Length: 215
Image (cartoon, rainbow, N blue to C red; front, top):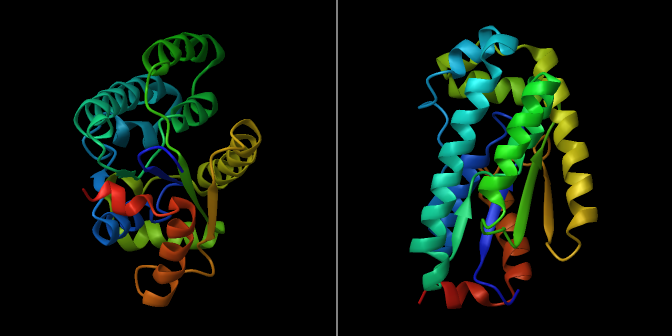
């Protein structure tokens, strides 16, 4: 990897993206970029009535993620400091395509392309995936009130959407390494050995650039 390391972690709701991003940030001394979730004023209403509140919810996420990435490009990537993020902004279209009606999705997509055409692109992706049972268990464990009304059918479809999205991502971006981690078999929060294996995979793809990023 010749570029300054910019690692994005992706996967369904509750899979452990932020937990892993924090651990990698500490291990490599990378800047941590966390997506804004609970601050979204429409999210609770969205889980209660997706059709009614989807456009407001998706636009809030898009605008805030755009601002975060704009700040990252100015403050970190241009100063040779590495970043690990618990999301990739292209996930926005994945959610929007599932939740928005066709006419609203067309408007959303136009705005998305305008905002993201010059945004920095991660040069490594970590994809966390798991069965629906594991995802539901982890959502219950973290206990966010706004997530308690999420329907299992929505999560199951989202997990499949992510699988399709990541398969397509690997085809469209063959130069960007993707590390796939099975959440049913891996617990990097409680098992240090599992975390060490992930760190080893990241180090392999960094090819020594972690040292550059620490300067």
